[in-house]
Image (cartoon, rainbow, N blue to C red; front, side):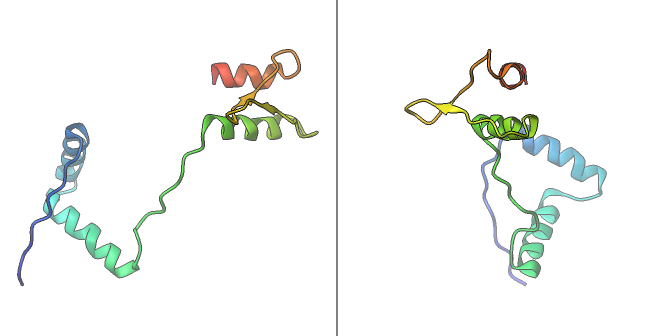
Length: 99
């Protein structure tokens, strides 16, 4: 079997943390990467589902819907950013500001 190299640039902290975990699993980085590639081939897809993280505006809108069964209609500015009236929706405003 012919071997090939894979050159990857990765954040040094991520590499270090992953390497420590792999060591505890009894794996080296080469074996782990080969396992990852083999799983991609076997499943014909990534072995995990990438997820798009919600923007702050999407999180606010979701909180507005969840916290107000009457469906809060929020205004937006010219850039599409959600504007929250602190007096009308104090719970949503506080959530947006304080998390």
